[in-house]
Structure formats: C-alpha cells, structure tokens
Image 1 (cartoon, rainbow, N blue to C red):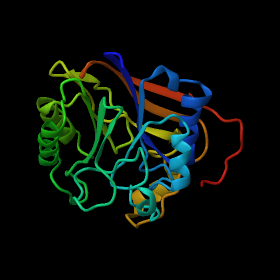
Image 2: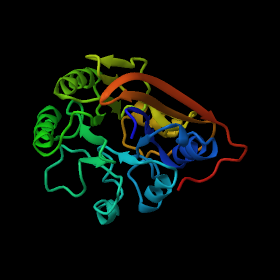
Image 3: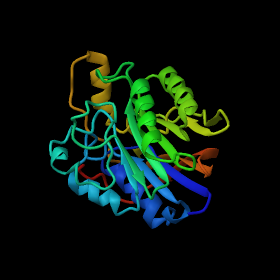
Image 4: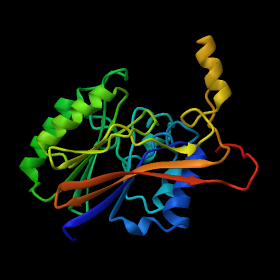
Length: 273
C-alpha cells in the first residue's frame, strides 16, 4: 500500500433515506473508487434505530469497509445474533469488556478503527479517555504503530468533550478523531498537533426535510408537550449525505474536508423499512 491514503467517513445513516443516498453516492455515482477506505456510522440505519442483518449486508455491498456505531446499536435485538460474525461492524469500545462485538478493528494491516462513546449527556459508560489510553498501551505492546492510521469515531453529545478528547487522543497517537451523534455537521475541520484530523460532528445521511432525520410533526409534539412520542423516520426527498474525506501520509493526517451531497428522488413518499 502506498504511503498516501485517502479515507471517506460517512456520518450517521438514518433509515432507508440514509441508505439510499449512501448507495447513490458510493455506487451509482461511482465515488467509492476515489478512496482507499470507506467508514460509515450505521447505528441509525434501520428505521432510525439500530441495524438489522439485512441492512448490514446491504451497506457492505455499497463498498463500505468499516461500520462504526453508538448508543443505538443495540436497538434491534437481532444485532446480538450476528455482531460477532460481522467482518466490519464495530460497537463502542468503552462498553463492558464482556459485551458482544468488538470496539476496534485492524484492517489491511494499515488502519485501526476505534469507536468510543462520550460521557456528557449520554448513558452511563466507562470513561472514553481512560479506555482509549488503555487501548493504545495494549496496541503498543502488540503492534508496530509507527505507520498505522488510528481512526476514532467519537460518538458524543457535547462539543467541548469532543474537542478535549480529540486533543488528548492526538497526544496518544490518534491520526483522526471525528464526531458523530448530533447529526448536525460542524464547520471546524482542522489538523490537530500537525497530525490528527478533527471535526466535531460529521452530520448525518437521510431526508433533508425532517428533524435530524425524523419526521417534523412528532418531533414538534414531543418538544411542546414533553410527552414521549414515537419517532418516525422522514422519508421524503431530497436526501442529504454528510461526510468528510481525510488524506494521510503514513500515519499523519494532511487534510480534512467536508462533503455534502444531495439527491432528489422522482417518486412519491414510501413507507420506511
């Protein structure tokens, strides 16, 4: 593999609309071939909550090499039946060590993909700072990390926590830290400490008409009444894909740029699956 390495990271895929725009961008528009490696966050890919085996396989067929996730990865019960067999799926590393699945994977002996959950405004979880430090120390004892890219999907709510974690991770050797979870892309792409690409949140893939991928009316009623209400995924087009592309030389990031791709379907609204 050459010393130059170009990676695409796709933000949270939300429901069928998200899956369709990802397929349009990667397969129909033939953009997958531009990248050495493609990662996508898939925790909302099946009806907005969790990931079914069918949708897992559908996304793998779109030339996605690695799948990160977050706190919603367990929302479809069937995940426990196939997560250990998936060649690509990664759950947050800072769950308990006996949790099914893996919190990081090494691909092509070149890139290490890690998934972590933040703590602020999130469900109780082991400290991501300590978990990442322990993982790096473990990997140093097992591997030569000199030319390996260490990519972290930090699934968290608070921007301050994301920025602080990214700086800490860069000091420990991370090559890229990108944020997910809020579904809103941020305009703060930067190279930290001359080696680590960073963006607070990459954004999401799904309907542009909803509220971070969900239908407006249910979201409105829930916010006005404070009464829990079932969210439904917005399926009307146009669909939006938010991503970032990162270029590396050896294990150092040299550039990070936002990508926004829009797709309009000439069809009536369909039911979500």
